[in-house]
Image (cartoon, rainbow, N blue to C red; front, side, top):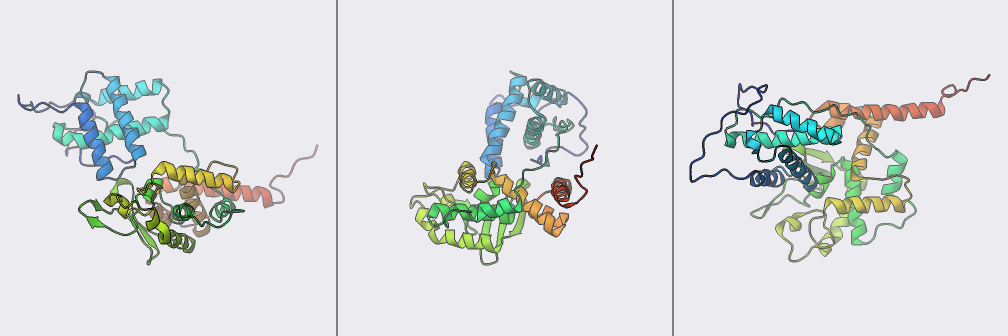
Length: 348
């Protein structure tokens, strides 16, 4: 997750290890405890930045880990040296590079938010580098596996409201390359009301989805014919799953759970894995697998890295370039199978 900008003041250094002096609090104005400040920040990430519950829970754990490294010291009093020390302690405790990088991103983002109000002249986590993360290739389905999953191979057509909902969700994940948090955040139409303002929604007539992704960036993604067909089949029965006492968020939500509220990420994960098992796919299928499959299959066909970057909502093209490695692996496997001399065994 990218850190938020605006926490550092122009010209502030990042190399010093001691924090700048804080304005003295008046006798009648005590500073809020760290826990209350952390919860205020996390609430803002959820309400305004639309971070997923999973990310917010992870960031909460990361801030508490930082607090445990320096018991009795307020977070505002920590400097760059302490941030480096905390990262070293977590590494020594067995935390892997990816988790360390996420923890550092959480700390950096917190201090970007906190610095102006605390009178800090710099973000103490800004100059600390995250450990190098080994580049693992994303787990993508083959084209045949994706077709078997979405065609419900050897299964009856989706008829019940829950089955129609599931197929619409999975088709949109694959057709639009959405993140799981983006999928569950979709509304069935744009809403602007006192109790709810849409950030992401479907434009079925235009065959598009307006998606607010990481960093609050909005993009428009096209939806294919199969996704639109599954979407219309779901919308025919959606209102039947709506709870009459649902709040405005649920009234606007595109996908609903069985209690008539906006569907949760965990439900999507479990339903997708259950379908993968029913159609006989010999691997664990996660919602992000469909996003990876979307990118890989599109790149294999179109060979347009910049277009894939835009559709995925990647801020940097280097993030998208990992799919070129996945595409090369696909080509190499095809070469090994098809070329007459690719795997020729030498004879003694």
